[in-house]
Image: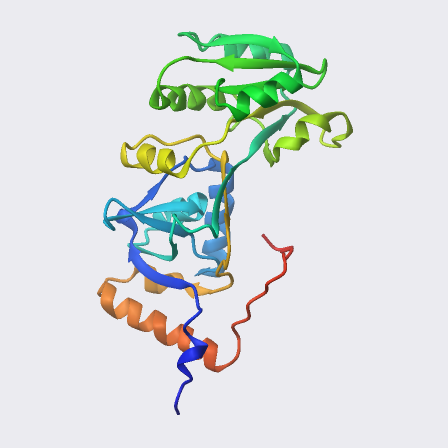
Length: 284
């Protein structure tokens, strides 16, 4: 049976690569990773591949989306990972930022813990409008709004990018693993009073450039979990690849031959669909 080559030319680039060559640009979220490990054990398949970009001359694959899935695969003893490889320089890959909303953590002690980090960390009270400008210009490390009193604090630390990321990790460590972290967009700072989760504080972060993300990754300096937000056109979802193939000692070449056969069959069976419109998924 002949296959129309046009049916394959616009498909996303999917490959099985050595997990040891897959690197994270931000830390994983322990709670989310644990949930994914449990789900993968139950289903024995990887539904959605992490999205990566080739860096370091193609020697490494930097995870843009899927740090927790990548970590879960490592915890489950997989030798390799199924990934979707994208061109990081493409305008179809947009780098944005999440803010962190935390709940059920005392407000004043929380700020005391931040101040207790020490070093040259400084907190200065500011208005929200000034905070927006400082974050946009990357003149502060982050901003903290305490919900019980509506006050906003600029957190400053004047060293280089590497040092700033180290301090950011110390700040996030104050609440990571102790409370649920909700990722929200920057405009949420103006709507805290109407949030039904009864939040304690909002931590707003500045934006980074793609070049900075690559530089930090190659220097083995990770941002805290859930800060960067990559918007990626043409995401590959529901591949549903069995974990047995990722665990096996089969050669990488033969694994990718099997992967291509699986994708080819899905195309022939008309199971591959491309949705141009934004889509809501209710089982993530």
